[in-house]
Amino acid sequence: MHRVVTIDGPAGAGKSTVARLLAGRLGWRFLDTGAMYRVVTLAALRGGVDLEDAGALDRLAGGLDASFPPGLAVLNGEDVSAAIRDVAVTRASRFIADCAAVRDRLVAWQRAFAESDDVVTEGRDQGTIVFPDAFRKFFVTASEVERARRRHRELVAKGQDVTLDAVLDDQRARDARDASRAIAPMRAADDAETVDTTGLSIDDVVDLLIRKVLSAP
Image (cartoon, helix red, strand yellow):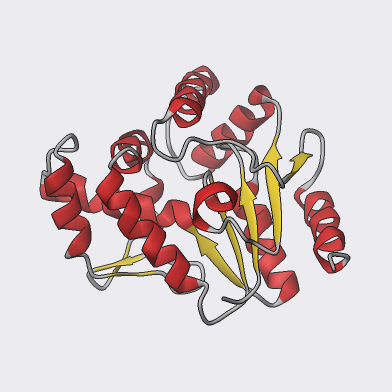
């Protein structure tokens, strides 16, 4: 396996943007694990699959034609990069994350992704489950209000009519589910370094992480 830097943390902490930019600065590949879960979720919603039927979800995931070129998510030849960020997909993705069989498949996809290149990956279980022997591990977080504001700005910029209070409520519910999930709960790996991005710009965070990565033995 090549070198892997894991960036875990809660929704809205900026880990996806930071991981993408960090990968670009390092010249490594970026692995957006959330896009994988969202692609399965979108396919399930479009196919009318019962989100609580683990067997049906596993069969669906096993038959998907999905790929993840840089910056894109492609499902059955269609660019679904925007569609997978819809609020309905976000809310339904918890069923995919809670499905052990699908999660096992996606963990295998993620490990395969890192077999041929150095990778910066982000998610909620990258340092604890998927890449326990990663080169460097970070847990990126921020205050819940700042995280909600970031997500709200992102959704409004995409034309979605949603209030900050609604985003904050969804985020709190998601944080609670992610932390209490029986399968791969969200937590910092024992050997991960926590980075609080509250009050920091994206560039500040990327600069901080790249110094830490390049200084690693």
